[in-house]
Amino acid sequence: MAQRTLSHQLILLAVAVALVAGLFLLPKVIVKPKEGKGELAQDAARTANRDNGAAAPSTASVESGGKPAGATPEQPHMAATPAQRSEISSLTAKYTAEKDPIAKLRVAADLATKYKAVEKFDSAGYFLEQLALARPGEQTWQRAADAYFEAFSFAATQDRQKALGAKCQELYGKVLKNNPDNLDAKTNLGMAFMASENPVQGVVLLREVLVADPRNEKAMYNLGLLSMQSNQYDKAVERFRELTKVNPKSVDGQFYLGVALAQTGAKNDAKAAFEKAKSLSTDPSLTAAVDEQLQKLQ
Image 1 (cartoon, rainbow, N blue to C red):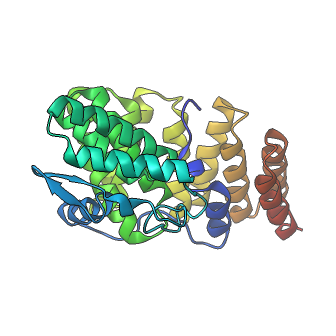
Image 2 (cartoon, one colour):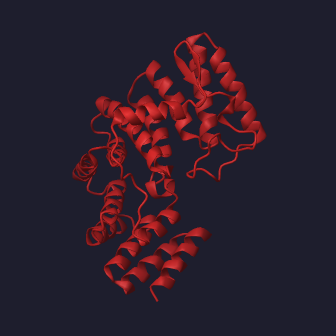
Image 3 (tube, rainbow, N blue to C red):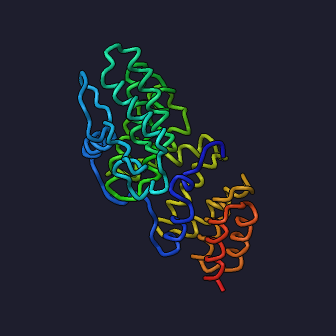
């Protein structure tokens, strides 16, 4: 796929194991968008200072220990180098002090890049949103929305899913207002709705994507995962089979096809799918996960 799939962002292997156990890490709690939005504003601009109404993360956004401040389970692996911490600290101070609007936007762009580098996607999204507010348009809104969606996809707690999902709904809504035919934005918006009080709308959006583009891998993949979440494993098998027909080299598709088949009791077909996934990747973590699932099928 052209972009990293949702499974990569959710840490594919950990989620797969949870799926086999009957637990899937997708939003399950209803939340009103306004509630998530307020919580997210506090998190994205942690320990914020106010400068003419603009919130900017303070130097505490990256801890001296090398990990982003308030590191959550979705990003325990990311450690900022001393140079990265120094750059963020310096840029944050510069952003807070800068009075010239154009210069401030340049600093915001630099901060977004630096926060992405340390996988603080919500903070990156915050600064990209400042750029979009100053220069609204499909591309600027999508860059901000995509950063928040990265954070949403990594989210390992329901509170994070709720807050980030609401922010994704808000920003992808702006993208689609500019271009209703943006299928990537519509797909991500569909997944974000799964954390809302109207998860059915998410399924509707994903189906609309497939109507517009029957070979859309991302929509097929996510609909397959949602079928698994609701224990509709036969439907999941259909989705992942179709995905692997469109893209036989999809590691994610082959792996989850194996998971879905195993749940339906088709052990031999599941083994074949797992072996295919294993043959398509050199990732040792994937190999270990496949071996574990194959062992369970003995």
